[in-house]
Length: 376
Ligand code: NDP
Image (cartoon, rainbow, N blue to C red; front, top):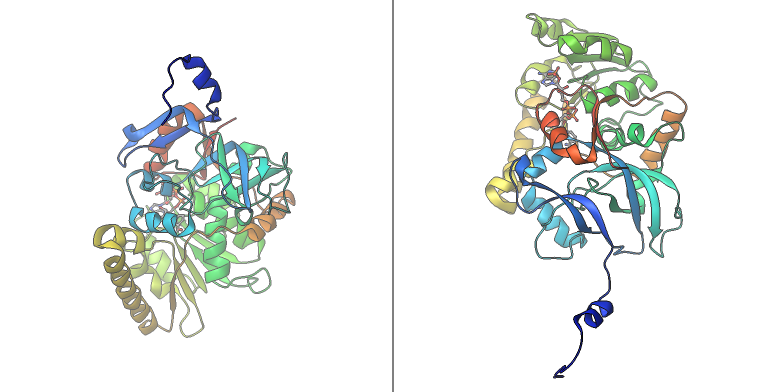
């Protein structure tokens, strides 16, 4: 090996390639808000695949999944997926950047990207195994983004992609509702005041459904403004009686889980293909608890039990749905926003530096629409 007898340290430094750096909120281990670290020298993510796109994030939203992932939720499956899809170049997921959606500007594209060029204003929602958007830059795949609505600011646009893609997966892909077959259908949306509910009400109204929603008393004006036809105040004493007395519905969207199916399955029409779509999947927590195989087995057992219970209650289809990136759906939603059929619903905007406050707020589960962070 070479022995360097005389050299200055500056000449060695000059040879080192300077790596571009960015501000980012990073986790080095799972835990509470105290584990969120603001770095000014985080590595700007690099394009790994031909279809990858480097994006400057202007605004991002905070979702319950971020707060849950901060605590370690889903780590077993997500780490497996990071290995399968090659989204993490190191052995460990740390330093981990959270945040699933964004509005921003394309900075650089992989050589296989045909639809986007630097300078395009885009929005998107990233697969859960990717490093996230609570940073100045993120890398997205071509299939995770679209051009963003022209009529919105970045802050407004960032409030939509993650909840929109979850609701799209739940009500369209799993619930099988379309703009053509929805008119006249009755859809019950639980938790109408939250991020998911406020988007779902608007999508269903724009497709012509009769929308029934549950929310607490102070959120009634909001869900009414969004177009809900029948509102059940779940804090009122006779909410269960009210729910039982409504005309039966075709589809239920349940983002709440827990006891909700036990008092809602009866609300669905019998033997008519009615669907109960739950967003609360036991798979991720089960694999964290029992390991990959044990957790999957436990989840299949849970699903079979729910399928059995719902089938015996009148042939109801009990289904789970989960967020899926979908560029075609994002494009469709962007045009619905620009034509005034869907509006952003923003509860609170936080400065980038105040992100832990935004996590604390979302963790309180009292959202009225969305919580957004201003990254610009
Ligand atoms: P938010 O925190 O924005 O909203 C939750 C809302 O639920 C609050 O507004 C709260 O309103 C309402 N709520 C709580 N309890 C009840 C109840 N008993 N009846 C009616 N409303 C109730 O969260 P999001 O809307 O963004 O997400 C909601 C849930 O959806 C998540 O916690 C997660 O479980 C699920 N989800 C699943 C995804 C998946 O891929 N499977 C993806 C995204 C979300 P109030 O203050 O009136 O109680």
